[in-house]
Image 1 (cartoon, helix red, strand yellow):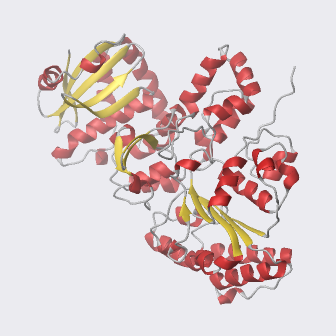
Image 2 (cartoon, one colour):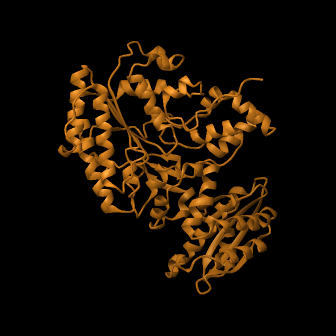
Image 3 (cartoon, one colour):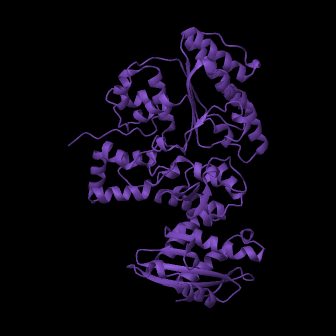
Length: 520
């Protein structure tokens, strides 16, 4: 029996990974291309996507640690292995709610670099930007080499104060002189890279560092972080084999299960999809198809922020936006970029300058079910489990009457504040609540689907049935069913092997609930 492979869960240091004999997905060819094409780089990816490890790999490379790269792509590509002084900052532990904590971390980190390279450092009172500028020049002149600058989670102190515009602006203004040095000290800098979740490129934060190249959506770097299917097959054959045995599945079917649950992230125009590496490594180590997304920690700030926006969760599976939107700072009126950059949504289709976003995979869908949607809707998580059990049976049996009665009970428990007083918006609100419930059940569900005959309110799919639904407010349910029939809403699924059930549903603005329904 082969010894069990070691998977680097939580390991973000390249040297530790290589010396410890852990499985490593070789990204050094992409790294080599990047550093030979660019000098100042910014990369945005969701949490736990391997950004810190990539920076650590860059650090080892620029320090000339050739022995760590033996057997990897860059070992043969590089011929000189020149060593440079590296200044690596990790802002992951710095709270944005304490301004002094941000400046203190940066200053003490720079003091450490000064000791390492044997140079003096000017007083903190001179300002973080001036201290940084002086340090870079001093190290470069002392070593005779240009300096490499790596900044991990540059946005941590900003994300923690998203809901507080005053604090957000204050932290941005504080960091602006620090990042401006990346341009002013260009002659002393060999390479610089910043990583984070958010893309705050429209803030004053980078007004002085406009030489940064944002590669977040560059097709050449589609797989710079994350793991492709081809990489799984190349680097994880033993893990796949063990999983297949554990679940009594053929390896092809096992890979299909992994794709459904953990694959699906797409960040560029290149048709390249990647797995979340944290989830993938956890699966290989534990040999169980669990939900690891929740363990990455959805911020309560994120939930608070989303609940105070006008975002329509109906759009989670059919949201078309411009590419430019994906790079915008978070906006309370349209938090699309927040959902995309944190990994709740990803690119599904691209048409010109427009992209359709959707939920990446089963794991994220279940995270929405267990964490985001209940909080957004004001429902206790304990009630969610009971709802799931109650709804699954009638859905699988095609028992629409029981299903609607359960929906009525569900809607009766929704907080009054969620049901808007504006009657024109109530139909959309009810539609949203039912859509969210179907997502919570785990049903393949899409809303506002455009076909030749019109736009269908909602379609939900189970292994045996396809439910085509149309909603009306204070109008007969028969009218909704007639619309389904007259506009041939069920036609796209008529030739399939699943029974199509058409349902017209009428909401009452007075009762704030379903008043009537008919089945086709």
